Image 1 (spheres, rainbow over the protein chains, first blue to last red):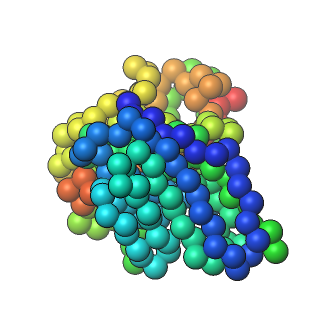
Image 2 (cartoon, each protein chain N blue to C red):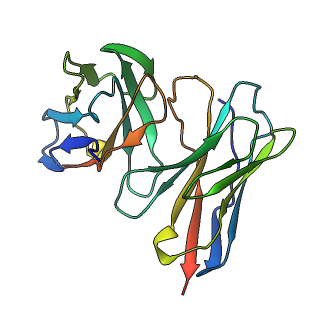
Length: 110
Length: 111
C-alpha cells in the first residue's frame, strides 16, 4: 500500500489558519488523496479529496503539489471544534477502501 | 440529512461468545465498509461490500464474517470473541463506491 507520512501532532491558535502537511512520495497516477478527521468519541468524518488540482469546499482547502508527492490540508480559521485527528489517505483501490495510517492530532488553543 | 445507523451502540460480551453488529447505510447507498478501531489506535479496514457482493477484504480475522442483505444493510458476525476484539467498530456507506460516510460506531467490550 502506498504510504502517507504526517506529523504526529500540531498546534494552532484559535481563529488562525492551519496547514496540515502530508507526504505521499510513492503515490501513483490514479490514487486519489482523501482527508478525514476524527473528533473524540466519533466516527471519522470526510473533509475533502482531490486528484491533481487544488480543491475547496466549505470545510477546508486541499493544496496538491505539482508532482503529487505531497499535499496540504488548509483550515482557514481554526475553531475549538476543529480539534481532532486528521488523516491523509490514498485510495489505491478506486473503490474507497480507505487504509488509515497514523494521522495528525490537531490541538486548537483558545 | 439521514446518516449511517449502527446498532447496538454498546455491547458487552464474554470471551468465546458471539456478537452481531448491524449497519444501516444512508438511504440509496449501495456500498458498505467495516472498520475496527482499538483503544488508542487508528481505524483498520476490515471488509467492504458493493451491491451485496464482497468488494474487498482487509485485516478481518477468520473468526469474523459479514454480509450485505437485499435491503443493503450489513451485519458483522464475530465468533469466539477474544479480549483483543474489544474495540470500536465503525460502518461507513457510500453510493457506488464513492466517498464513504461513517456511522457513530458500536463499542464492543469483551470481558
